[in-house]
Length: 111
Length: 114
Picture 1 (cartoon, one colour):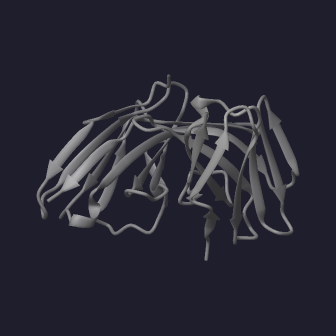
Picture 2 (cartoon, helix red, strand yellow; picture 1 turned 90 degrees about the horizontal axis):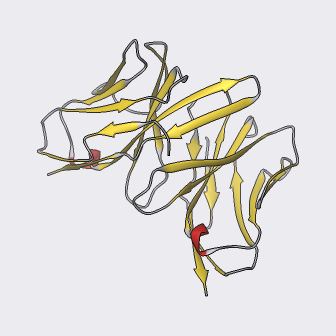
């Protein structure tokens, strides 16, 4: 069945790079997403990548996809206190909203 | 800030009761989806509406139903509430334009079933 796994916690020093990892099981996954959820705020789609891509960069965010290993990562360069949040990895087979989410990685920023 | 709003913000209901949650969509989007997020979990897809028709459903029983209106706003109805229905309910409006995808979430409705 479909499953998305990610580690639950990550602590990073302010100014360092954060790398959040994710693995998924469905080889039919065509769209892979990263979301951010801050306490008291809604869920925000940060970025997404198509399965025929290896990498996507958007300002401080870099997404890497290893389709063979079904591994997705999100790198946040120069991590700021405002990056403190829960980050969800997610996947989908189709161009609809039937998106399968992981349980989220809580990113904690150390001063 | 997105144009997706949800009401009410919080709600407390008793087991067996029925509830209706509401969502407005982002201007220009014709798809609305609903997700259930239990504490400490990722969101789970309930269903999706496109141009007033349900066109995708997750593993939720029929007592979860919905509507989409001509202005693309939406309702989620849950009948015969159970304790496990306690969760944050998120609404999202979305649109594909070629290979570009937009999806905006509302702030959610926190439902507590006692």
